[in-house]
Image (cartoon, rainbow, N blue to C red; front, side):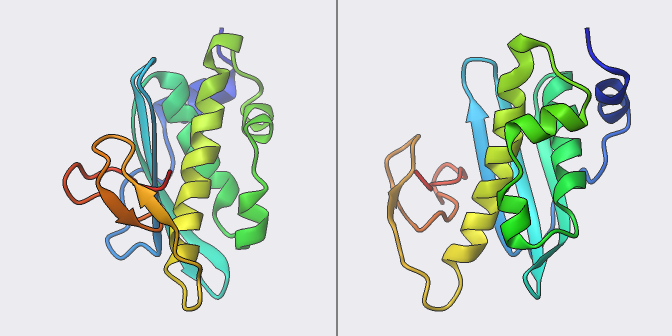
Amino acid sequence: MYSEKVMEHFRNPRNVGEIEDASGVGEVGNPVCGDMMTFYVKVENGILADVKFKTFGCGAAIAVSSMVSEMAKGKTIEEAMKISNADVAKELGGLPPNKMHCSNLGADALHKAIENYLAKQPGAEKKDCHCPYCDTPVEGGAICTPCKTNGHQ
């Protein structure tokens, strides 16, 4: 049974879409349940000025993505990086135990988008990453060109 808040965010998700000139992009997926989430962040002066998402998945995944975007918008990078799966589930009024993984995915996708932004900053340490799907080398959390996934691993 879903809370009324979960149902509201599922029926009327906030911040759906993508940011064309995003400062950072993060994508996560769970092949077991089929949920895929991509988060886009626009950072201005250390603040998440805009947060959008595109999610393919169940109602809980959509509600989680909507809630994460609401929770993160207007926060500093540091504050947004502290958003946890427990925080998301609490804000939604709880999730059934078999849907708690969705809250992990939402927080992880947001954190990956922020990490992608940070990796692009001058002086950022470049990480040797490989796409988890096709093993193509990708630069520090960038999107894999051949398969269009987030290559940060």
